[in-house]
Length: 318
Image 1 (cartoon, helix red, strand yellow):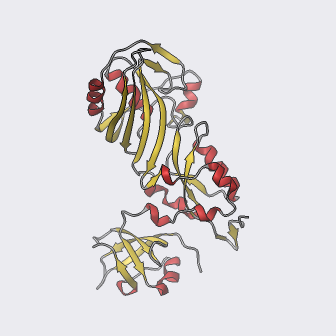
Image 2 (image 1 turned 180 degrees about the vertical axis):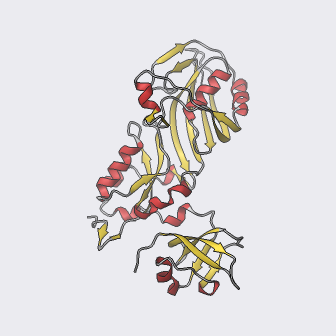
Image 3 (image 1 turned 90 degrees about the vertical axis):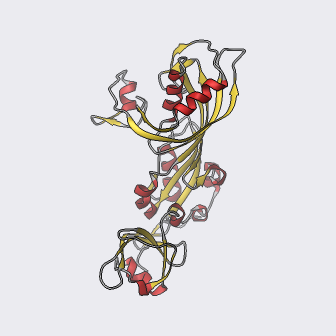
């Protein structure tokens, strides 16, 4: 069985957990599930996934929650289905139908629309979202039948690929299967609805699966059933360094570990290796051994040789 995560004031369980969120659960439901499993309150996620959607939900356990500001901006990849000719009040299949019509559009028209929405664009967040307006979530206002003005927000659609086109000859409801790589803050159901408006027929998102968040892919994710049956959840955790591959790696000498956990600076003489050249103010990951994250630090070119100044320490005192 799992040992208590707290012992002598130390967090024994920390790391990153790649979960396959099932449809029907909120992201917070999944966080609560893991909190109960671990008996640990310090659990967070790096980006909400809507209840009807399934896919990758990256959870931060223990001190890993301190990485949230670095991970929340990771690109996300989705695979989904758009149904044309039907508008809903939630922009997905869970909402009330606002209008319905038979339409005849071609694959070429959809490809043109996809091209139009690829790149840096502005997007108006949907009313059914967790954004706040004067202290209330937008979805709470929507449930009260209220609509408020929302300002467009800049996002980037880095890739929008049409995988399959279904012409809808029988029911007049064409569908497309697509894959999208996008920046943080992108609402895929709003993207689907906006594409429908661009084509003049309306549309909604009828299916969504998040296949990747940064380096974390759905093929490597864990089902909640697997987590429930696991006696040692620490075996499922990924190291903190797995989320920070873009930062230069600085492997320090073993006798530097205690100094770093106390927040002391590290001079070049305490370093075993550096993976890249550094510039003043560069954020790096201090590790010992390689891939065991001790701290995030900034490189200071001060004094005769410069030094690394820890700004976030992840290892407890040893």
